[in-house]
Image 1 (spheres, rainbow, N blue to C red):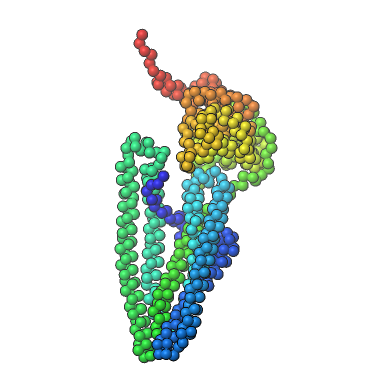
Image 2 (image 1 turned 180 degrees about the vertical axis):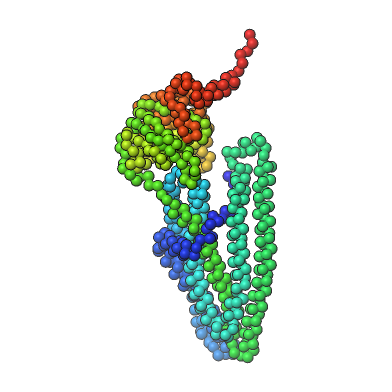
Length: 617
């Protein structure tokens, strides 16, 4: 689905304030990335670019000789064969230039593709090694998005612009040597004439960049508002409540604010640009007057004059390319700093530690606490409990009580900031998170809806068994996902709207597949985070019956706001503000008349209030 074109988002504001040493290190790091992506194509691109940079001077010189010979031929002093020889050299230079340009373009394209793959792979590898906490940190997530967004062009841009600088230096030196023969002041005047336009361009290029950077927040909001207007999942609610005009008005307000700053920038840039063009024209006029004076004195030939006329354009273009290349490298390195900031984030090695073997029979929390980095509030504090194989433990509490954080600690997605977690009496911190997680299977409240086949949606729980058709079918049956049989391709049907031919499911059907994914892994610990939130009453009953069967010889952890689900647990823990305030069975907690009883009574009243009154006799 297409929508309003998103506003470009610049890198983090801190990036353009890094010390010069950082810029040099980033440049060297970028060049290493390019070299490692494809040494062969890197060398080919650099050599063809440098050889091609010497051709303008060669063409100018051969053109000068040809014009001089034509002038002599008019007086009968040159043969036709001599003219053909020079023409042959000129054609050969054109063919050589075309060949070098073709090889250069091909090597640049292949280098760019190799580089994009290489850097993308590094970003994905890095993302795979980050802790879950990192993804819940807005700054870290911004770094990931910025790095991935710029991966296609920035590293290659730095390399090609650096090679371009070297080529520009070759061109400028060779063409400048030819023009210097025309008079001492000619080349300096042409060089000076090139500077005003480049200075103005670079100055306002930086100002434009800073303007975009100041607009970062507004651009994000505007892009978000455009996304609301084009979202396939939100279109129903937007249409029903009819707030499209409000969203459009806000979207346009942000645009108008940006446009106001842009117009001011364009006016100033246009004024200074005209002034720079005027200065350049005067300097070129002065250089031309000096050349014409020498021509009138018979001190230069027709070919020499052609070198001057054609050399002006060549020198001005080369100087502009040289200075713009320096500016371009600087700006590209700003974006590269985003990539390096992301790649320099600390990893979490999920395979570090001893390997856990066998089922988990007991889980014990001993005074466990957790606090997110850079915060001063404990999400959990002093949490202690034990659950054994064959038992079902339920977690109850209002939103923000710490239930989901506790599950993330249990499943080794997070590590406690205080206390410890014991597995079969052993400190879980001794063992690699990956090996412990293999004994755990979970359905999260925000379970994944993978735009893949139905079979893959189930078998992703254990990718080594992707082709285990009987296992997938058994998990589907246990989850009550019989609807799979009605899909056009059965388990091989692609799901979701993202790709062509995909079949969209209801929320309850997606949840059934998530349950099947949980059952597919032969784990000794099952975690259900709101396992029936998207199910109707019948589906909830069937799911809970299946859950009872699956939980008999495993450890089961339940999180639910539905007390019809919670009451099935052997023991219930009530969390409030990250602290356990009650613990016991359903009946024990009701008899105690505490927090659990209050929450249960509130839900029971809600059910009673929704019942239809009996019809009068």
